[in-house]
Length: 208
Image 1 (tube, rainbow, N blue to C red):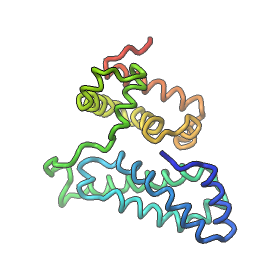
Image 2: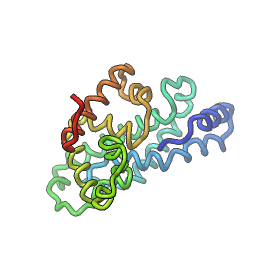
Image 3: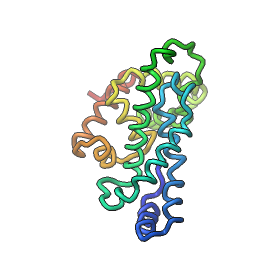
Image 4: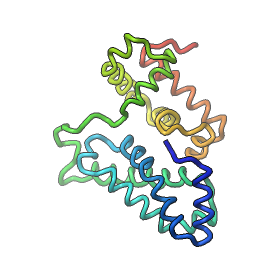
């Protein structure tokens, strides 16, 4: 999901050397990945009020303003730094719109589209369950996707986040650990725990 790291590192070096074109390319090449990350995490009701592209633009503006600070002390990979900025923006959006007493989104009729997990959710079910979708499963894709969405929504926030990071964002265990401030071992254990719970919710054997 995230752009290739080697090219990102080269653009960072060029931007650090004063290349303004490299600076623009560095931010722009992460726009689509940021948008997918934001779309996956914005509440359905809030998406009726907040456009993911606007959130992404705000993130990129902030990243541009703070880029010099990041380049002087890159405590984490660039894409993890960007998603950290995006995560803060998403939290702000939820607080702002859910906290509004004048017109709470929770009181509005639910007319939003399904959560944007697309075809990748079906691939994840295949990975988590049988490793390969059978013809029968392929014939009932909508039902399978609905089952997955219902199951993942029943996970607690930490378990759901680690599944999304590993499968939807395709982050490595080391990247998840860095993003969550955990050791690699702790991140791995959280992921395995989340998979066990998800398999149980999907009616699959947990191997225990």
